[in-house]
Image (cartoon, rainbow, N blue to C red):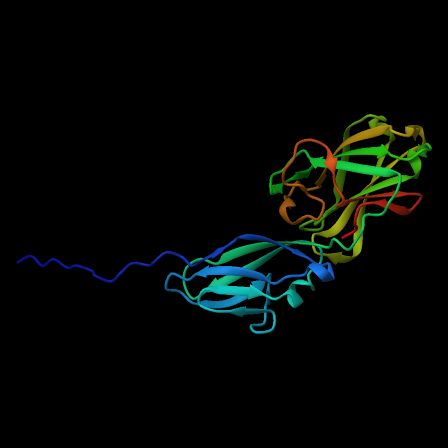
Length: 261
């Protein structure tokens, strides 16, 4: 006799999901707004909301119903400028992730005589080398000594190692480009190091309206990967020079371009 066994237990349903998966928050006091995220639970239950290893407090940092989670502006305003990943955990299935881009339009970019444009030559999220390219333009009415200029590109080292720098090409001559890896005394979201680019006296001057281009690259001594996706100065898109206020510029030690993290 043959016995046919049929399992009528329903299989796992679809994962819970959220919409949208990206959002923006402006820290300027007059523009702060809660972020509402629609929930599709698909039979699951929301168990917690976290940022990294820190759990958000229900009722204080967010409110939740069966159809939506509202992230409160009082919590969002505590986040520093930059990208933040908020993770929604459920009692079964995969987590859902919301990326929040936090800005602060009340912080004005300092007025100065330099404009810094930049893009990344390598836009992979994980890479053994970071390849920022810079274009520095004198928008003033008098010449600037390049030896007085510094640029800073902010990133996370993702495993502290010795690092090496290369200037692959520079309009003022690669031999006239200097570099220093500056470890931040207090790490911030998106940065625990800064690549500081400088120039020797032989780089000369930038006359009004004149630009200098520098194509750089740096890596760790063991060629282990950086995670560029969470780096303050990283631009995931763009293959042409464009104004970039997350790279900072200084003349004689004074901030004249960009917003420090």
